[in-house]
Structures are given as structure tokens and as C-alpha cells.
Image 1 (tube, rainbow, N blue to C red):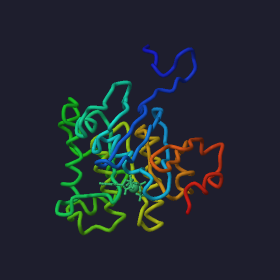
Image 2 (cartoon, helix red, strand yellow):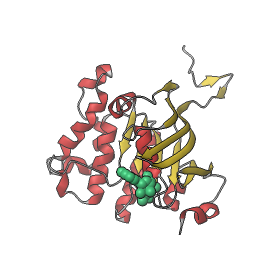
Image 3 (tube, rainbow, N blue to C red):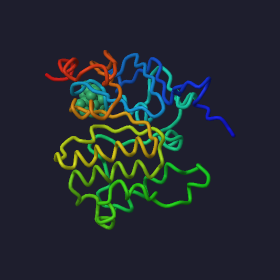
Image 4 (cartoon, helix red, strand yellow):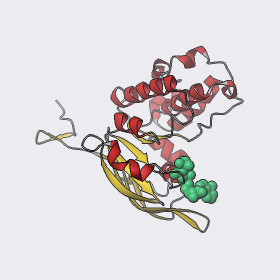
Length: 251
Ligand SMILES: Nc1ncnc2c1ncn2[C@@H]1O[C@H](COP(=O)(O)OP(=O)(O)OP(=O)(O)O)[C@@H](O)[C@H]1O
Ligand SMILES: [Mg+2]
């Protein structure tokens, strides 16, 4: 029997899925990210928190490849992907749910989900399959509204669609930018349940930007706090309490 590569000497070895080394990014002359170091273990859930305008979205965009890094290095599964375009990173298994959702308003739910399949291009056998069943299993509402134009959906429905679209590309790393922003509490609960299942049942590693510390603490294992384009604090949500860092997030 083949031994699992995760087990060496009987001890579970953590595998690094994503590594950032001294990443910087800028909009024109204005530098927004400074010397970002990050190690994300396979299977983990990390909450990225910080006040408005500190660079959380820019950091996710830089990981996804929508924003160019101006210096530093990014490794995904140990391979240097710093120079890869966004579509190549998507194909490598990096999924993205942008802030504000950005579904295509004039396309139907099914058409939006189909767009997510583009990330499968070049990944052999799976590229000919349709939308994976687990998308509808996680978000049953999407089946019901499959033919509706995305622009007509509620914020919560659009968010479920945006997450479903990212999952259609079968990512191993999923980045979510404030998925609970502007969504009613009952739907926030549904999204939280779905994210847990995405992590546990699908084994997807998650980085989530989240303003609500309660949500971040109940969902993630570890947290990173950003301030003025830098990560100023990192720790475990299991051994520290949200109250310890609330002064770094609240105004
Ligand atoms: N396209 C852009 N062009 C120029 N500057 C930008 C652009 N996008 C963001 N910025 C600036 O970069 C900085 C970081 O913005 P970013 O959106 O990454 O912050 P954030 O932490 O995600 O904020 P929020 O909590 O409001 O979503 C801000 O000062 C912002 O004004
Ligand atoms: Mg943002």
C-alpha cells in the first residue's frame, strides 16, 4: 500500500500550499503592499482582517494575479507562480470570490456558473465535465433559480452564485473577499455552513477577508491583521480571543 505523503515518521507533516515572500504591490506610483510574508498550510482556514483601505483586497488580487506584484515572490505548491497571469493561476487551482461579488448581471445563473469552468482548461479529464453536483448540493437555491438573470438576484443569492462559480473550477485554494458584506444574517449563517463544508468535505484551503471578528473567529484557525499595507500581527483563533485584537480592527 502506498504511504500517504502527509505522514512521515508517523507525524502529520503540514504541507505549505501558498507562500508569499516579501510581496509588494502598487497602483501607479502609490505603493499599497509592503513586504508581505505569508505561509498557508494545506487544509487551513485563515482570516485576513484590518480596517478599511489597509490593502486586504489588493493582497487577494495580488495572489490571484489580477494585480501585479512589484517585488517579492509567490510560491504555490512549491512552484514559483509570481509571473503567471490570473487565468494561469486559476488553472493551477486558485479560486477567487471578489468583494462585491461581480457576477455577470445579464447572464443566467447557469451561464455564470459555466464561466467558472474556464479554470479547468488544461486540467485533463475534468475539463469535459459540467458544473459539479456539489455546487448545487451546497447551495440548493441555485438549482431553483438556475435560469434567472444574475442581475435580478438578491445580494445573498449573488454571493452563493459567486462562491459556486469559483467552486466550479475545482480550486484547491479559495480566496473570499468579505462574503458576508451587506448580506442578511440568515443568509450569512447559510454561507458560513457552506464554507465549513467546502473546507471539510472538499478539502479546500481558505483565505477569507472578514470584517466581523465573530465570524472570523468561529470559522478560521488563524488570523492575520493588516495595517497600512503590512501584516502587523498573526496568530491563532484557538489560543487568542477576538477581544485581544479588536482594537486593531475597530475604529
Ligand atoms: N484601483 C486602484 N487604484 C488606485 N488606488 C487604489 C485602487 N484600489 C485600491 N486603491 C487604494 O489602495 C489602498 C488599499 O485598498 P484595498 O481596496 O486593497 O483596501 P481594503 O483593505 O480591501 O479596504 P476595504 O476594507 O474598504 O475593502 C487604499 O488606499 C485604496 O484607496
Ligand atoms: Mg477590500
